[in-house]
Image (cartoon, rainbow, N blue to C red; front, top):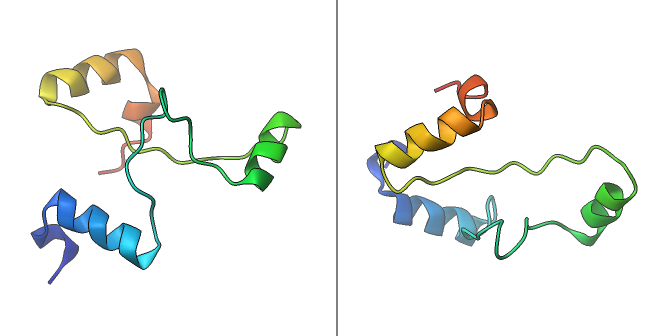
Length: 78
């Protein structure tokens, strides 16, 4: 079954089980999930990227985030 035919819960469960993503966490309250090596790099001025996917409650929240965070617009390739 193609991934597009699955709902989000099935998709995220498969990703966690197969090891290509972690579970959803809150970057505000839980922090950004990093390895010890990435923490070292970040604290020592290296340019480590940690990709984040923002989940929206609804389209109103999507519009509010996009009006406040321009990378959410210019990184959107979909």
